[in-house]
Image: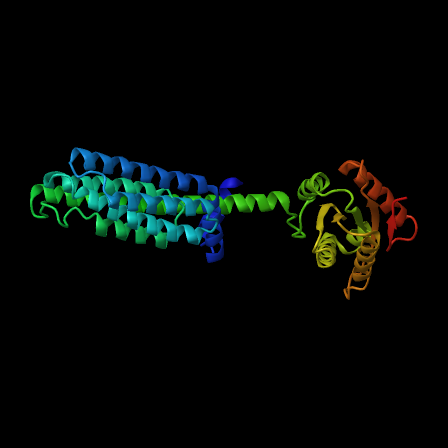
Length: 358
């Protein structure tokens, strides 16, 4: 089954909105890792600069302090950044300043090894950015910056038409192609894993027929409300049952029964959109209200009964509702039992009504 779903997902092109959501999700998940990459890159640049400055006899100049301050500012800003598009801009600025800094340091090493150090620096930076949660545009901009400023054939003693130059060029092209391929394939794999996880979560927590949350989702959200929302803010639990639903199925068939379920679910969604609701199973639904008064709960229950009753349809139905206030000491199971008792009273006192638990 998993393989069938996976094949269906891979056949489709992800919409742009899903791609944007995925990029934001990846950035949030890898935010700390991105900060670590910035810190590590800054540290490695500083070590490289110190080695060249003192062993090369240049000394630690004010330019080094300026670059170090710039790297630090960008890293601190990243720590407070929460948008993926802002991260793209920060990364481009960081790579731009880092490549300029590396290029200036390389001028301090002997001419014979400058091209080798430039390729080594480019390889390190390309590997680092290939694992960052960048957008495709930002990634290619960074690639362009790196190869423009760390080009081993610009202002060095190496020539493209000698053996060393040909080997350097071949390695640079291979390195560039490898990082691009790795970034794109890794990004594609992560994107489809994200889509698969969203699809599986949707199937696990939503009712496929009515397209509203299912019992598992409702129990999770209701438990969260019980634990996080103070009980001085009134909590109410509603249990809903479609009246004479078995008769609808027996008379008109299960296809019509399914249509009735979907219609009632749509009515619940319309009236209770600001609250948590779900299909518990069969013809039973549940609603959890927080921070509402008894009068509000009565008004919502009455409006739902009216809307279902007055729907212009070939197969009209009504609903019965049981309402209970969730008390300070109540567990979710106890509240469900009380709401079910109130629903039973609605059923046996005429249906098409709501009843509060006594």
